[in-house]
Image 1 (cartoon, rainbow, N blue to C red):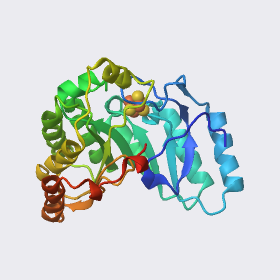
Image 2 (tube, helix red, strand yellow):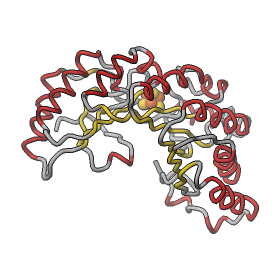
Image 3 (cartoon, protein in one colour):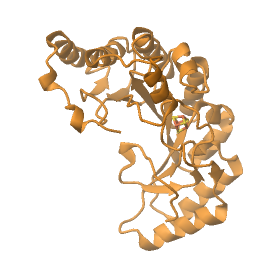
Image 4 (cartoon, rainbow, N blue to C red):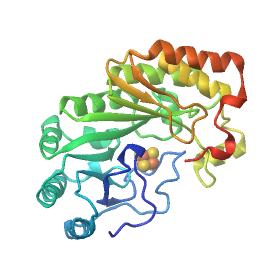
Length: 292
Ligand code: SF4
């Protein structure tokens, strides 16, 4: 496959065929994100994409049932190109069940619900959206490029189109200063979005990113470890999610949880409160095992 540079995919797409339909991220401005800084954004030609699909069809060791489209925000591709890619995938892989895609809020808002529905009928079944924070000041500070209300609108469009929605939030991204607002506003926005999946990661400040430079200058300070866990607790506590798998099992986190909300809410809160009250570092993931 003609993958350019490092490829990133959600953990839940580990067994999917990873198809790079665009290189880099059209936004590429989030201050914490090291993912595509060395890539110039471009959409691959249909010919390149089809060649990759053909190569995968020739070499796949098992039937392809799931495909994930990357890099950073390929939902921003023109509708006719996406339609053609999805049609080609369907005709090449007759057992195809679901295609997943990364998106940002502006990609989604650039489409209509009927365009999203068209993609849904062609098996685009799940959208992975990085919310990071529901706090407007934090979103501005990290140059996310969308407001909380735009995020909510985009999420509702995805759900209205019948697709599943997986939203990522970043513990610690508000820094010490906005830790409380970050947790409270993030769960407010998640409640308004009602995603089926929420993945909480902990921000890792990577050298070379603007966030790292801010930290070096003293303009950004990470909350301490137990405040990061308190952010997670506050989000679970404030949740009114109707049917959601809320997980924090990414390697960046100190405490892995996997909670079906609302069913597991009380048990999860009890476990997190216990960790916070005891301040027992022995139960946390050790620093050397944490990573992106
Ligand atoms: S939109 Fe996503 S991929 Fe693009 S810079 Fe922001 S976090 Fe990174």
